[in-house]
Length: 349
Ligand code: 3MF
Ligand code: MG
Picture 1 (cartoon, rainbow, N blue to C red):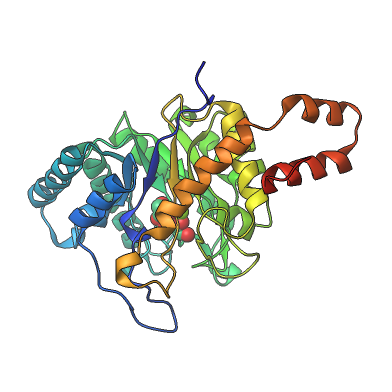
Picture 2 (picture 1 turned 90 degrees about the vertical axis):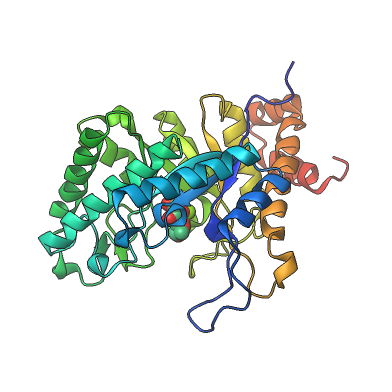
């Protein structure tokens, strides 16, 4: 019998090995080349890499389709050489001057057009590097000043954009990664419920799934394990961005389990109970290098997050189901609480 119900493949993105700049200070580490980051992924035991479109093709807006294809093929070869897969390509719709006021929901029709064209290019790249899906973190779709947008129209603009992209590539699968705020004050697709609902508005709901990020759920005041469970109940959870977050503050992207180990345990529990990964789902980490890390130890957060996941998987598998069932039956949840804590701490129950 296999040890676990789930089959786990791990990924992270090149932005997860960063230079440590924050809004209050400059970079504190040297940038690393993509080729090195890809090698690191292999060395640390990861199975795949997540990409923004311009992680694959830098300065994407200045390049011709032929140049873009050539550079994307080069990255595909780099992945093949390491035996790694691309998990997804996400269009970076929050960086260009055209996306200052939002991408699909900008008040300027020329800018909305840019967002669709840019997403089409991202789809082409996704297909060249053979990633199974495109992730849409709708970073600037929302508002700073509510009266500046019509929120109902915004939802429909995103629906229309998704419909155009789904029609552009009949094999496309879009995963929506919700986040309630940052960079905008108030995002129009803030939670996983909104993401699932948005999929049902499109012309092909079966090709719109979602991605739950721990920190984003916490920022919405929600429990990430419950958010994952909700999406799983709809068969919509294809990827996760595991990390951690110390309450309602800026998006921290701390190492998985580093702030709230029990909350991390429950995320792993939900995934394992479902048999996550058996239908191609990925376990991604979206964790930041701590600003204080020196150059040569700038990937520990990735190795640690993956290892914590595996340790917690073991905790999930070795939980005594009989004790759990007895305590649930007796409705003695105080005792269940104590049992879980003893189990997590590794002390005798
Ligand atoms: C922001 C995020 C993003 C997305 C990434 C892929 C930069 O809080 O989580 O990371 O995960 O754009 O969709
Ligand atoms: Mg993320």
